[in-house]
Image (cartoon, rainbow, N blue to C red):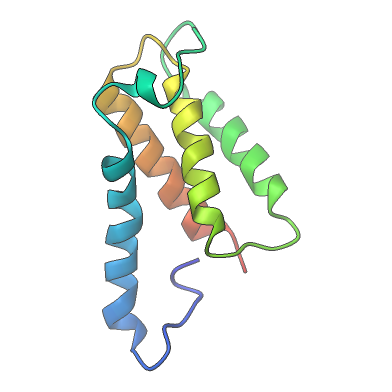
Length: 112
C-alpha cells in the first residue's frame, strides 16, 4: 500500500522508506513486554505455523475486498497482535516478529 500511494508534494523515494519503517515500528511501540496486557492467551497449543499465518492473512484480506484506507492499518495491527498472542508456546520476541511480518505483508499486498 505504501508503494501505491503518494505523499503530497514529496517524492516517493523519500517518503516510502520512512512510512515502511514507521509501520513496522508501530508494533514495538504498542506491544508491551507482557503480551497478556493486550489480549489474554487463547491457549492455542503449539507454535505459530506457516499455515496458521496464511489462513489469518487470507481472512484479513477478505475483509478489505471493497477497499482499504490508511486508518485500516491500526485495525490490521490490532487483529494481528491478537492473533499472535494466542499462541502460548511462542516467545514474546517470536510473536513480535510474526506480527511485524504479517503487517508488512498485508500493507504490501493489499491493493488500493
